[in-house]
Amino acid sequence: MSEPRPPLVGVIACTTQLGLHPFNIAGEKYLRAVINGAGAWPLIIPSLILPDDPWPPTALLERLDGLLFTGSPSNVAPVHYQGAEAVEGHEDHPRDATSLPLIRAAIAAGVPLLGICRGFQEMNVALGGSLHQAVADTGLFDDHREDKTAPLSEQYGPAHDINLVPGGLLAGLWPEPRVRVNSLHGQGIARLAPGLRAEAYAEDGLLEAFSVAGDSFALGVQFHPEWQVADNPFYLAIFQAFGAACRARAALGAG
Image 1 (cartoon, helix red, strand yellow):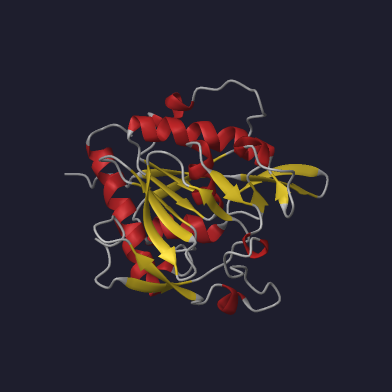
Image 2 (cartoon, rainbow, N blue to C red):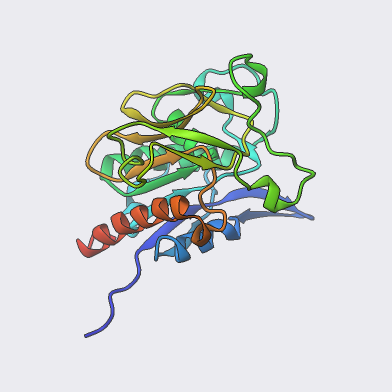
């Protein structure tokens, strides 16, 4: 009897210019986390859709067992949540045009979904929420950005605790009510979208994780659990739960 195939997880790409040519890219740390954390195989989804282009995300979803929306140097364009003109960072309009409808279609179809950092913010915006464009400038929260001059081990090192919401998805994955995570983001959730439930807050009150209400696995986290996932039990638990949901979908023959 042959071994079951690993689940197929679509990983959204960012667009960038390398020399004279445009590229679609996905960070290796996310791809390896899908393999080593979720026990699945990543397939990069190019962000080739332009604003106002029609495209059928449901046709793609029929071939996938899960979706990962990664972090990125870019930010969701504020036009998608009636925000003011962007105050920091750059935008990736093809990614917005690809990811936002794909998120809505995936949730409607019950496809397992994990959003990280930008992906977390995309999920909120796709469902009608809004963002703080500069968390540190609100006067409400601490500065959650990393020191970009520090070595990667320090940038992605433990930065602050988060408090898990009792009875939530994350609380069911971890035995303690709080856990320490990294922090590498300038933007954050302002208004939580309808249909999302809070999963964790930073000590300053900033929302750090949410899930989509319903029976399917759909989780967004502001921190970066993909970083050296096999060495961090909490991060690994997140990816293992995502992988289990993807395998359950694959077993139904939906992917």
